[in-house]
Image 1 (tube, rainbow, N blue to C red):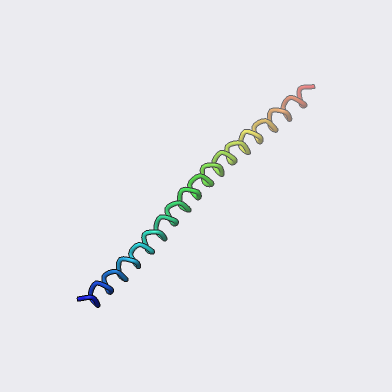
Image 2: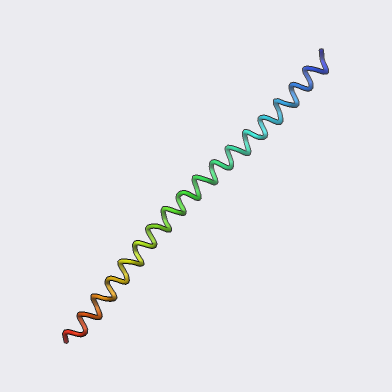
Length: 63
């Protein structure tokens, strides 16, 4: 009986370790999602910068 309880306890410990790993992976996934959002914002800023550059070129051509 005690051996069975010890085995179950070890299995529970392993499951808890796996649960902690999963929690960490989810946390890292959330960080990655935030980084991807920032990357999209950066891309939009670069597009706006290109538009501004084109507008400045046009402005210079009118002078």
